[in-house]
Length: 113
Length: 111
Image (cartoon, rainbow over all chains, first blue to last red; front, side, top):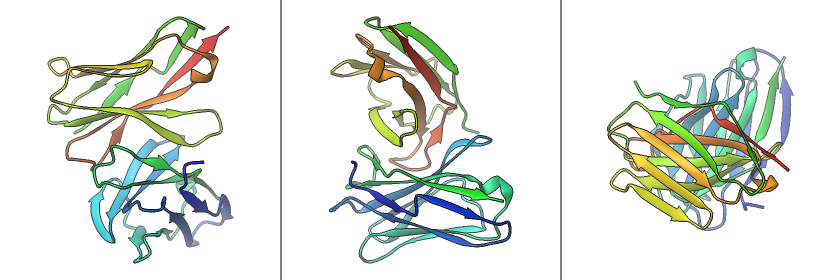
């Protein structure tokens, strides 16, 4: 158990809908990362927050947004969902902003029908 | 643009050494990482190396970096069945930002 929790574990929704994925980092970790893993695109870095501020942005679509709240949990919002958004979404946390010691959550598996 | 390549499959016998290779294209990559994903499980950051290093050793793991050839390798000594997993190589240009992943190498350990 990494100490990083993600909810929900599974999510099934329809095209055009909007969903919110939630991540709670390990106690004391200030940095949260979001990743997407799909069969088509492989593993991709989406976005990173550090202590409430966006620190790095990767291959995140405009339809997706994220934020980190004062209690350091983070949410990833996916809107206007398409079939291709079906993937495993991982969250990771680290105490430092450099990602040298990232701890990963179990992931949220999203299926868009 | 950035691109990271890995061979997709590797099989070794239990007790042998495994060497997983990775090449990257961006010469300004400063951090290189190895991640492990076990079947049905999440990701685990195994180790990383800074671009000013040639080698890093951590118990059974040895990372070698050849900056001239933009080649990174992960050697696992005395490979065990528990090492069966997919191993991802990743690079980042800035400190902990914008990780770019390879396609992953599936390591199968045969008894």
